[in-house]
Every structure is written in structure tokens, then in C-alpha cells.
Length: 393
Image 1 (cartoon, rainbow, N blue to C red):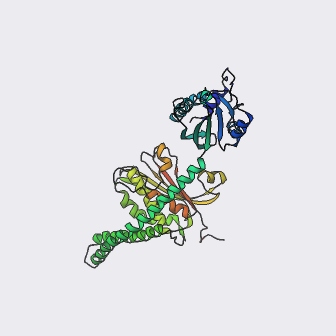
Image 2 (cartoon, rainbow, N blue to C red):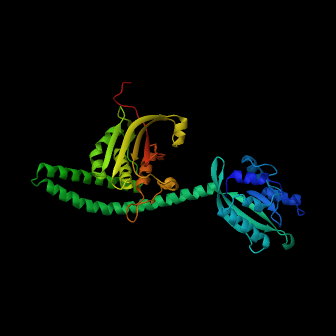
Image 3 (cartoon, rainbow, N blue to C red):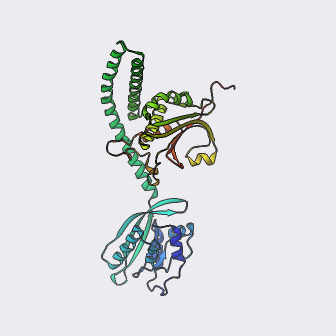
């Protein structure tokens, strides 16, 4: 509901002057300690009468002063969060439970605890008779439950993606075969050198589309392809003509390669699709004009650098795609890899491109991350490096 410094300041202030007359009995304290949550017993005036062992541990771990709020009015704890809507709702819920107008109050809320953000489920339940009605305030840590629920939701989304992909791929393949058949007919007709060049480009795109359909079906069926040893520099260099065509005349493309081939074990076609996906996203973010820089090199990550991108220490191939667009807003950075998430208006995108890039990268033993950038967006593919087969042993 608020930063812990706010609560710590509230708890450090003097307690309420009047000592509570309805202090809990030993039995009530024992019951309080048995609750699997950070729990406090409050009196009819909202004064905290007692807290359980879990509450005290949580208070101690997060820098609160003893006696962990006992003697403080719980409304003051809520007030420390200012106009935070969760805190306001908790204060109003407590008042309603104490007044008897509400049987119980429940609410999930985020908590920016030091070290890691967590989620809690707040439950306020009454206890005692009407004349001395108090309440038990319980904060259940539901962080892991929420993470599991989110993981399940992602799995369900991916299952939906698989079913949709399978059906659409078959339909698209039928249309594509008509195009390929007609291109083959055109190849037998007389044509100028320029016409043949355009025809070859169209046929190459059609062949790539056929391969893409096969990969989409593999994705839908969760079927993995055998990886091959490939030089990432050669793969990206081979994409240059298609990249320039996809980006258009108004986008400046700059390719940078480090010495060596930057070898890695991977599915070559899926790497091509990943780079194309990132390039198309960049093009759309720049509204078809700007500057796109793709850098391929090798880096060794130590334990600290690896942990920063969620990878183990070791040698990696790095493919960085940097655009000159407006960048990704801070509030959207955590969602860019979600299935179906897109910022493109209307029918501008499916929201699956970055999801498939991440699926490929993680399947290859690496990952893709959105790195901080002074301007534009910077996506970086990390793939485990392999030894150069031409290097002396």
C-alpha cells in the first residue's frame, strides 16, 4: 500500500495515550499466533492490542521498530500511505467492520517491500460482542499464488496461440501454394534481367514463407527442430537484402559485425525470423523512417552481468537491434513479451512477434531482453556461443 519508510515513520511516533482495557487473553494471543498470516488484533477504537509472531518477524525484517505497532491506532498505519487507494479502502473497511455494517473486508494489494515487490491479501474480520467489538486484521502473502496464476494464464494463452496458429497456417499454406505455382509459370516466360531479379526475390520470399509455415506448425505442435552450428554474422548478413526491402527507403540500415563468425548452435530459420520480427517492430515504431542498427558480436558474461539478464555466466553471441524511435514507455516495458500484447492501433499487429522471439531465444538456451537506451528501443538477443570450427585447437 506504501513504501515501508512511511510505515516505519508512523510506527516510530508516540503510541495512543490510553492503554487498552480490552487487552487480549493468553488464549487469544495463542490463536493469533496460529494464524498463517501477519495478523494483528485491534480494539473497538482501532488500537492495535497485539500482533502475532509472523507480524513481528515481518516488521523486524523490514526495519520496523518494536513493539511492531502495538498500542498504535491502526488508522494511523493506513494514514501513513496518504491517499493510496488500497490504504484508504483498508481504513474504510476497518471502520465498517468495527461499526458492524460490514461482516468482513477483503482486498489484494501490492507492497513495495525492500528487496522485492510482493502482493498481500488483506482480510479484516470481527471478533467480540457488539459492546466491545474489535477486529482481526490479517495480511496473507499471496505473491507466489499470483505468480502461479500468471504462469497458468500465460500457459493458457500459449495453448490458444498454438490452436490458432495451426489452423491459420494450413489456410495460409493453401493460398501460398497458388502464389508459388504462378511464380513457377512466370519463371518460364521471357523476361528482362530486371524482371527476373524481381521474380527471384518474390520466389525467395515465397520459399521463406513456406518455411515459416512449417515452423509455425512446429510451434503449434511443440515440435523442436535439430539445431545446427551457424555463424550468426553470416545469417544476419544473408538477411540484408530482405531487411532493406522490409524497412523501406526512408529507413537507414546499418549492420555491424565483430571479428569472427560469432558461432552458435541454433535453428537458422528461426533466427532469421527473430531478427526480421525485431526489425519490423522497429520500423513500425519509427513510422517507416529513421535509423536501425543491428550489431552482431561475441561477449563473455560474468556472474553479475549474466544475472542482470537472467543467464548463467559464460560466452554468448549478442545480436543487438537498436532503433531511433520513441522507445518503449516505462509502464509498458514489462509487458512487451506478453502474447497478444501490442501497441499498434486497430489491426496493426497480432502481438505475437516478440513472444515468438523469446520462445526461440529461450529454446536455444539464451534470452531476449529490452535494454535501457538513451533514445529509441534496444532489444538484445543473447545466444550461447559455440567454438569456431575453423579455429585451431
